[in-house]
Structures are given as structure tokens and as C-alpha cells.
Amino acid sequence: MAVSTAQRPTANARVLILTFLTALISNRGVADVSPGASPSEELPHRRFEYKYSFKGPHLSQPDGGIPFWIHSGNAIPSADQVRITPSLRSQKGSVWTKNKVNLDHWEAEVTFRVSGRGRMGADGLAVWFTTEQGLDGPVYGAADMWNGVGIFFDSFDNDGKKNNPAIVVVGNNGKLVYDHQNDGTTQALGTCLRDFRNKPYPVRSKITYYKKTLTVMINNGFTPDRDDFEFCTKVDNMVLPSQGFFGISAATGGLADDHDVLSFLLFGLSEPGQQPPPPDSEIPKEEKDKYQEEFQNFQQELDKKKEEFQKEHPDVQGEPMEDLYESVSDREIRQVYEGQNRIHLEIKQLHRQLAMILDEQRRYVSVLSADVLKKGTNAESGQLDTVGQQQLGSVISTQEEVLKNLNELRTFFHESLKQISSSQHQGNAGGIGTYETIQHFNDIKEHLHTVKRDVDQLIQRNPQNPAEKIVKCPEAPPMPACLSTFHFVIFIVAQSVLFFCYVMYKSQQEAAAKKFF
Image (cartoon, rainbow, N blue to C red; front, side, top):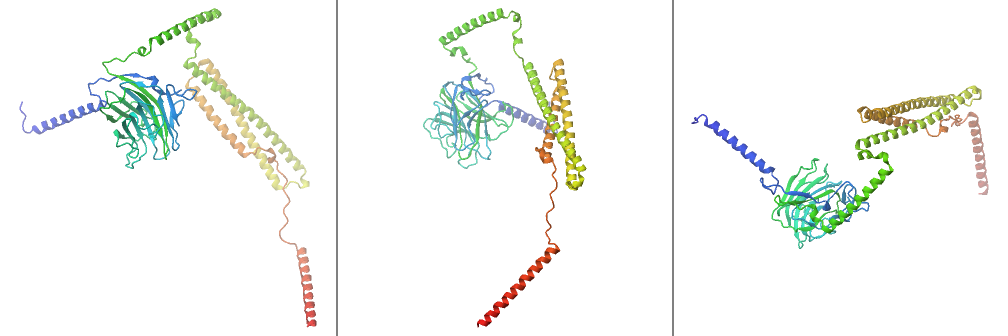
């Protein structure tokens, strides 16, 4: 069917739109394919290598070591992470596998955190695969002139080109000296600029070596998604030794950061056509037979102990084994009851202490009241003036207010004890874990905070020494500063007499001097 001249622009526009959408969809499909793999290429098989990995919790042993790993320098293993270097100046540390890894293709996932107070940090962290363990050295805490590859997370800008923090891949055949002044850019096989310091979530890096291609993926640490990786760099035609040690090292300089590694997971990769060897093939036949014999002996001893136990306890026979162990729900119920009992005991103790304080306050009020009555009957002695009576009255009113507050607290404690006892009976009768029980615990917690605040206010308003509350008799007023009339007259007369005597003495001295001349 022919198209008229007026319809040709519309048809051309439709063709252009379809062409643009087809190109966009094809580009997006190509972008979704992982780097280093074609769209039709199958993914390799992965096998977790536990002897070359570590991860919390219970990461470190009681002796401070890491299973299947060694640490050196300032590295500090803990239960959930390994602090390669603390945030102190001039620190070095590293962790390395004890045994060599024999893998042609592998994938390593490293989860770490680099944190510091300053805007800039130093020096950085490195992930190694080398033929020898670089336990100590100048390259991020590891040895220089290594044979293998190092992936450096460099946080300090040594060359001043403002190209840090950065991730740099440097290979070495054991003869090159690392270029510190230029941050290894002259020797880098691949690099990307990524800021990995002070992130809200741990940073994750996935390093894959498959078919002579090294690929580095990075999770920037802004999201908790473990699979949210983005491409960093790729090195093609890279030949690495099939045997070597994995390691992680870090170092600090004039500036310092905490370099913490939370996990290092290693996976062996094999091509889809080649099935990975079964785990049993890695164990020698002699050791396998030995372990099998030990297992059989242990199984026989266990059966004998079971028979002896059943003979000694015939009433236990027929009960399922699951009833002998505590389930998760039972453990949660037990923990809730234990916490409730502790709260009950604490409130009881507070109730006893509050009763003691209340008795003491009542005794002080009674003593002060008796003192006021005694002072009132002996008003003619003049020992208590109007100011003293006012002060004593204020003390008595304060004590009465304290008694009122303490009575309210005591009533509240009594009600709390009743509520806890009733909730315990309800929990025993109908189970636990309902919303009302949780809400009741929250109310008790808020009331305890209120009680603590009121008690602190009472302690601040009332001194600990009750003797300070007793009002003493006012002291006598000080002597007036001005002189009385009698003292003033005596002072004038004495001064006049002294002046007259001085005049007479002076006149006699002058007369004697005239006679002499």
C-alpha cells in the first residue's frame, strides 16, 4: 500500500522512535551483564573455602588467634572483626592465611570499615595475593617487591593531584619497588576513584580472578544491600600464580584511621563444564579411614551409654528427645520471666528503703513539732524571736511536703508490686508475649524513671544530715558602728587636755632657748 506525501513525516517519526527504543533496550541489556562475561556465557561454579576465610561472630579464639590465619604487627582480632590498625600514628598490621591456596580461579569478598575523625585519612588498606607472606613492610604494612597482585584502598594523596581516596590494582613480579610518591599510579594496572571512609554501612569489595581477568567490584557503603555492587576496574590478560597466600594489611602515617575488617570470604571458581572436585577427594584415604574408625567407636560408646541410661531411668523411655532441650520460644519466655522477677525484687527493695526514709522523716517532724511547742510555752525567756519562728515554720512545712511526696511514692510502689504480681499470675495462666504484657512493662519502666527523678529532687531539696534542719537561736546583733554621746565627750576632753599640755611644753622650750642665747 502506498503512503501519501502528507503521511510520510509521521511514518518517518515513528521509525525514528522505534529505532531509538530498540537501541536503548539493547544497550541496557549489555550493561546488565557482569564485566568480563558475555551475555551468553554461563556463570562459574562457586565453592566456599572455609579454611581461607574468616567472619564473625566468635571470630577470634580464646588465645587471641584467628582459625587458619596469622596476624602480625598492630593487628587486634576480636569477636566480630579484626582491627588491622588502630587510629594511632605510624601503625602497621596484617593478617595472612597460614597455608597456601591452590586455586586457578577464585573470588574474594572483603567487608571492611575505614573510619577517622579528620577530613583526610592515612594511609590505607590493601588486599594481597602473593607467593609469600608479606608480614611486615613499607607498602601498607606489608613487604615490598612482592610476587602477585595487590589491591590498594589508598586514602592519602601523596602526589597532591587530588585523586584520592582511590582503589588501585598493582601487579608485581618480585622485582619492582612500589612508587609511594605517586601513589602507585605509574605502576597501576587499573584504578577508580571511590570514597570508602566514614560510611554509614560497611564497605564491601568483590575481587574476581577468572580466566586471566581480574575484576574489582565495590559497594560504596551507603546501603545495607549486600549485592549492591558497582564496577570499579578490570585487568585483562593478567597471569597470577596458581598457589599463594591471601592477606590483608593496613598502615597509618601522620594521619590515622581505624582499619577494621569484618569478614574475608574466599570462593573457588570452576568452569561450568568442569565439575568441582568433591570434598572427600581432598582427604587422604588413610586419614579418611582413621576418622571413620573413630566415628564408629564413638557411635558404639554412645549406644552403650544410651542403654545404661535407659536401664537406670526407665520412666524417661519413650519421651521424645526434643522435650529434653529448650526451644527458642521457651527461652524467650524464660528470659522475660527472669527480667520481670528482677524488676519485682528491685521495686521491693526500693519500697523498703522508702519506708525507712519515711519513718525517719516522721521522727524529724515530731521532734521539730515538740521543739516548737516547748519554745511557745517558754516565750518569756526570749530565746526565740519572730525570725526564728518563721524559719522553724518553713522547715516544718518542708518536712510535711516531703512526707506527702514520700507517701505518694510508697503508694505508687505498692500499686506497682500489685500490678507485677497480677501480670505474673496472668502470664502463668495464659502464656506470655501478648501486646498487653509488653505495654505493661513499658509503663513500669516509665514509672520507675519518674520515681528516680522525684527521689533525686527530694535529695537535692533535703540535706543528708538531719541536724542541719534544726533551727538555732538567732545570734545577738553586732555593736553599732557609731559612738554614743558620753564616749564622744570623753574623747573631746582628753584631746583638749593633751593639746593644752603640748602648748605649755612648747612654750617652756622656747623660753629656755631664749635664756641660753
